[in-house]
Image (cartoon, rainbow, N blue to C red; front, side, top):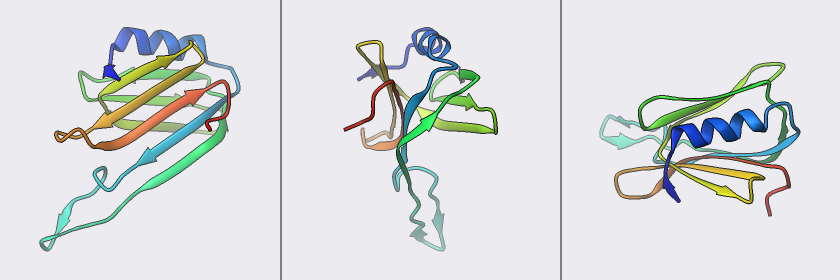
Length: 115
């Protein structure tokens, strides 16, 4: 994966809006956690192969980035994204890595189901 190229990601998001896609969204214990009373809170989320069709897809920020997908009924977003990879123009893989290179958040979109 390479550092996010904001323009390339925005172009991909725009070219895939109003299409039925598969979504993978994941956070790890490195994301959305904080120390409370000297202990680290545990948090995580995992969604794989959920169908999504967004009306608007936007990437914002100056790095780390935030991607928001506006659907007919609401929003899906991921914050803290740092890296991207395009696979055969039918998959966009986005990841947010912490200072140690560990995955904190992933947002992936695909025209075909994830394996």
